[in-house]
Length: 502
Image (tube, rainbow, N blue to C red; front, side):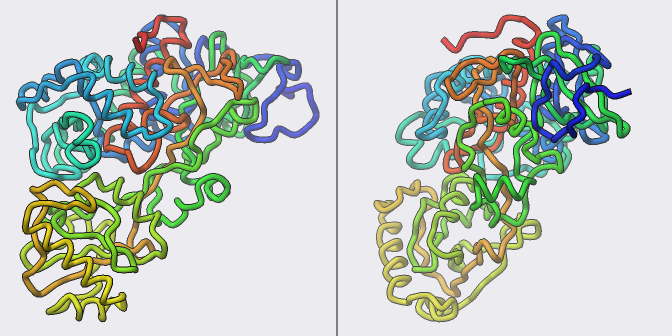
C-alpha cells in the first residue's frame, strides 16, 4: 500500500506536501533526526518535559561525530565551574561573554553567546546529573588532549593575542574523566543511554528523507526509510534536525566552502552529508556562514614548538604561533600558495606528538638559516630578514609584529635549524563545517525574513551556532553548542520554558 497519494518519485531532502500523505504510520510529540550530541540532549529534555520522543538515526548506533571527539565541552562563567574554582580560577561571566563574542567574529550571535555563558555552570551541573564524571584536576601546560583522565585545560586562544588584551583569560575546556582515547564515546554512551532510559524511542538504520509540510511551510512530520520501506511519521509538536554538518558532502563543499577540500582528514561520520541542512533550505530556511569551517593541524605538544615561528612560502610570518591550533590552521589556509613551515632551532626542537596522525615531517635541517632557505627553495633574503627581526625582538621579550606572549618568545639561534613541513599538500589537516541553519537560541529555525518556521527546530552542526569561524574556534565549542542548544530545542519542541539570554 503506498504511503503517499502522489505518484511522483520521492526526492531526498525535497519536502512532501501534507495533502499527499495518505496515512500516518506513527505519531510522536517530538521527532529528532540524528542521535549525536545535539539529538541525544534534545531527546533527554523533551522526554523529561513529558513529551513522547522518537529519534531516527541513520547509523546502526548513536553517538555521531561527538563519539569520535575528545569529549571536550567549553564551560565557565558565573564564578566558575567546581573544577575551575578548585584550580583557583573565578571565571567572570562577562569575561566569558566577551571572549565568545570575539571568538565569533563579525557574525557572532550575541543572544546565543549570552544565554550560553549565563547558563554554562548550570549546564555543567546538568551534565553531571546525566552521569558524566569530571575529575577535579587542571593541566596548566599547553596541550591538545591529555593522555590521562584530567579535566580542565586551556582549549582555545584565551591567553593569546588579540583575545588576552580584550578580556581576562581563563581555561574553560572540560574533558570527561576517561583515560586516553574514547572520551567522546564515553560521553555519548551516557547521553544516549539517558535518553533511552527516559523513554525516547530510538530507531537505528533509519534515514529521514523529507519534511512533511502544509501550504504555509509549517512542518508536520517526516518521511523515513526503514527496512527499504517508506514511513510517514507525524510530529504533534515539532521536528528537531540534529544530523550534523556537511563535511562529507563534496558537492556542498564545492558550492559553499571549497577551501575545506584541501583538508585530507574530514572530521565527521558518513551522516555529516548536509541532508538536514538541505531539508531546511528546501522549505525556505535561512542559512548562515556556510563558507566557514575549522581546519586544524596541532603542531603542539610539545609546547616548546610554540617558541618556533610559522612562515609562508615567501619566508614571512603571518600569525602569533601561541594561539589555538585551529586559529593557526585558519590563517595557514589563507596564505598564498600551499607551502608552510614551522621553523625551530636545536634548543626548542622536538617532534610533534600528533605527527603520527597528522604527518608533520621534517622538510629540511641546516647549520645556518641561509642554508635552510636554500634547502627549502625560499627567498633567502626574506627569510633572513624574518629571522633577524624576530630574534632581535624576542631577545627583548617582545613581538611587535604579531604579539606572541613573552613566555613563548625565545631567539632561534642554536644550530642546527629545522623546518617542519606544515604544507596543506604534505599534512593531514582536519576539518569540519561551521555553517548551517539560522536558529533562535531556543532552537526554532528561521526563514530568510527572520520568521519562525512552525514545527521546525535544529541544533548542533546542522545550525550555525556558537562557533562562527575557524579563526575564533576553541576546542569544546562545538560540543558545548550541541549539548546546550540541543537541550533548548528539546525543551521548546516539548512546549517547555527556555531560559532567557537576558
